[in-house]
Image (cartoon, rainbow, N blue to C red; front, side, top):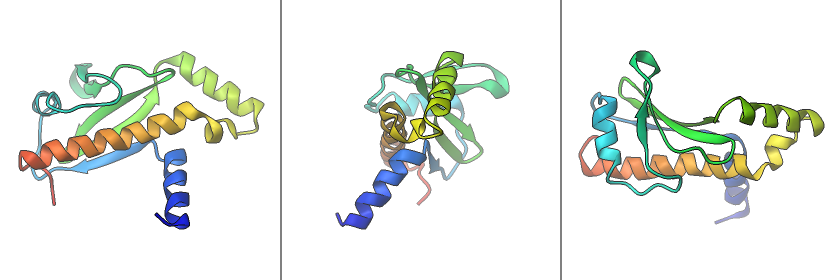
Length: 135
């Protein structure tokens, strides 16, 4: 891996807190969760939460963040969000104290960004095995 690729990967770990997976057909949350049960994830076992348009698949919280999976049409979005107001307040306070650099040096932020990609890769593998991944 060249220096440019290492820099690019580091920048992605720092900034990109989401991943997308494209499907070749629509899935319900229940169908997706059933497929996801066969996977191995770094942040625990996923579960469906919410009702109606607020439904999503969530993983257990890791520190002040959690990872959620949303289905919109034929697109699955894996994203990192705050696990409540406490996490949000800590992040804002850190950014205020460090003039916006807290997010850049926050190890939790970088680790969770990597986890979103890891979950996206695992999900892609599972969907490909079922013939549901858009190539």
